[in-house]
Amino acid sequence: MIPCCKDCNSAKGNKEWIVFLKIQNLDTKERIDKITNYINHNYLDTKNLLQTDDFKDDIKEYNSIKEQVFELLKIGDKKAKAIREKIKQATTL
Image (cartoon, rainbow, N blue to C red; front, side, top):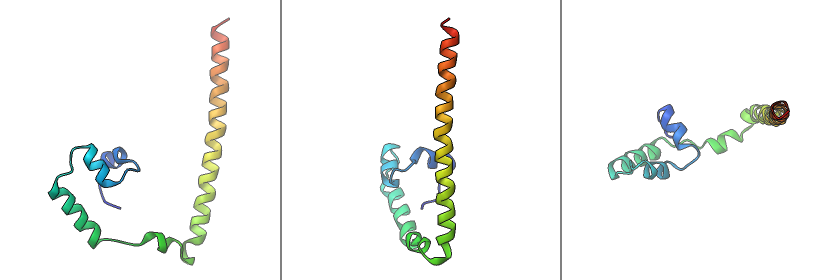
């Protein structure tokens, strides 16, 4: 993880940081060196940490919540489609 502002984080999305910099024409040697140095000195192995017993219950609960959210989004999409169809029918009569 690399700290950045909300706008940059949103624009970056799930792209690698170096790809994001290239797209934004911000890929100067100085900036790349600075970020690389930050990464090399601030690395935390979160992948292995999250697999420890201390996090298993939290991860399980998080995944359950995420699945519930996705299911609600599917239901919401179906309802929105039904509403659009009703509007279409009401305006074509």
